[in-house]
Length: 114
Length: 112
Image (cartoon, rainbow over all chains, first blue to last red):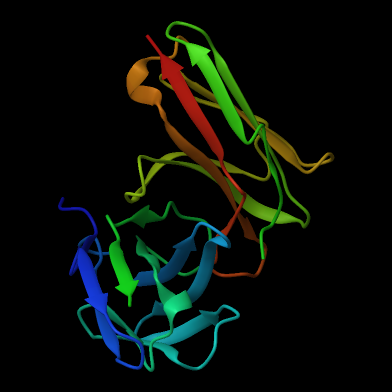
């Protein structure tokens, strides 16, 4: 089976712009979660989607949003970018939502905000 | 916020030696997972240990879990230069869905 894929791998934006990141889970996986990784804050949970519904949300401002499609692919959007949004954004896929399954991560999207 | 701390923050050993990393967490958990990350790339899953398990093995990896002390350890035996990476523990709390709460990580360097 193919692993979790994320596109694009690298992105450079300027302050005030918006960005959309994409994540395709492992075939058959229905849960997709997003994480932000920065040197200062480490790995932080953004949100989780399962069956096209947001099931869990981290402590991030409303500028961060996401959605999941019927094929389980997920997108994450960040509007009005700030310098502090520069980070590695990782998505993880899992079979179910129950918290009992292994979560597999993609290679990440490196976002740089200038 | 981080669930807990990992100890040590950095570890440097010689190839062939064993490496032990510790993780502490704060709340009751459903399971605990260990991941490896090479140079800012994606996270590679190593082992998942459930709250009712005390020890698990996978190849050269051994993970223990002590729920009474809210701690876990990862042992890598006979380390290789290719094991050089950052290692993170992550907990899934009961009723928290798939949300992983990560520790601060241990940077392991294995020298030839």
